[in-house]
Length: 323
Image (tube, rainbow, N blue to C red; front, side, top):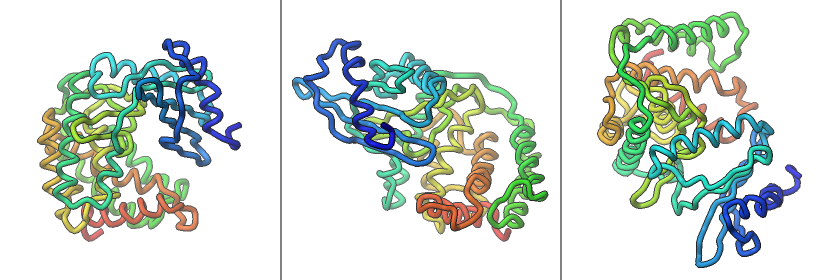
């Protein structure tokens, strides 16, 4: 059924879910909205149109076949919906065993698509809006002010470096990777003893998990992140942008972002600034994490991974100049 037709698999679950929310399933018509199928994920979203032009989204996840993970994602979405309803599509009902849910429909586009090919000024405006959404999310489920502890990030980075040096972990251009990683590790003292802010984090905040229309911005696919420094979410989102969309010649040496975009994002975000220690360290560490997370061999990278690899290498040349 997974290999045959994801749409049919999703629609097989629609009658039960429709009745749970008081709808007549036969009165609704489905059309494709989004689909992803690869070795790890098989997921489809269908747009449902019903009486009076009402619209909903039916989402079905065939892979991974992990009801516990799906349940955690649904619980995370509901927790956000309870305190930040304006920032998420409404989750109406779901079935954990079938890994299927029904949500309100948003006539919106992923931030990734909006950034594609946009001039720098337009990118800055979009990231300002994304920062506004993230600031609202972090304020809705706040943590506390605390002294940032770079030893956790640097300690894990050191373990990765040891694996690369021993050959236990294979990365592309290992000697250059080690030089860049050592430069960041040596900067640990710069982040010591400084305050940051924690919050309940998204857990997987890449550019496809924010969608926008002309006026609104919404978050999707919450991974149930922990209460950790806000730099974790910020670094995930902004490194994704810097790798895939930022014009690299607009990024100053030792920085990760064009100044216009950095200023716009933090103007929208408002909870901490670009000099927050968790932002400064985790944003740079994210460049290395993307590096070690990609297949080492060019022949093992698909088109999307090849594009990301090229972006990582160009960005590393800015963040770690001369290395």
